[in-house]
Length: 169
Ligand SMILES: Cc1cc2nc3c(=O)[nH]c(=O)nc-3n(C[C@H](O)[C@H](O)[C@H](O)COP(=O)(O)O)c2cc1C
View 1: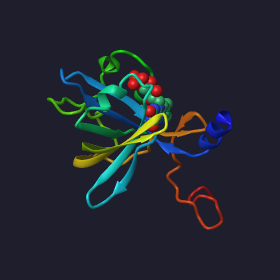
View 2: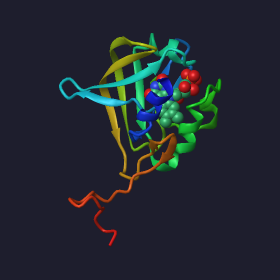
View 3: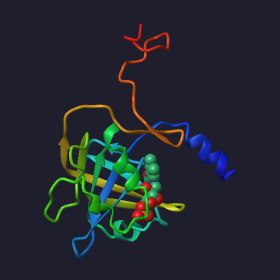
View 4: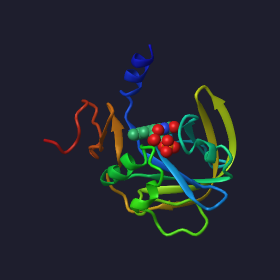
């Protein structure tokens, strides 16, 4: 059942993001997520679902602020690094200079900074809802996608009525 469930979910292409925060000492923490999505426009709310078993979960469970950076196709190395339990994932760089705010991925497609709005228990995860207090919109480009347990990107051509993509002949 659990494997079938995961197989079904693997059929859903998902965008890839990195959620970050800082602990009381200012140390950054973060992980790769595909559960990032929009919730509300007024007020502007987003959510991420975080596994209780993750190393950085306790920090997010008490954080008042966090940030989410939406990754480009060429940033999948960063996504892999942040999907491990490495003690210092930030040592490898890739983040814009920041003071005491949650780190933002340098040249991410877009990013939001959030104030924690609500937390909801949801099985072995916690749904963290954030109110967006600031945002970054960078130059457009192909996004990182996670599909069928692999990193991929999008064919930017729109699907036509016949199911094909425009511009491919
Ligand atoms: C593409 C992708 C998406 C992921 N999405 C989530 C997610 O939405 N929530 C989550 O808790 N873990 C997610 N993970 C797993 C975490 O990134 C992974 O468990 C990571 O090791 C957590 O870091 P930590 O244990 O250092 O806190 C995802 C992993 C990948 C590769």
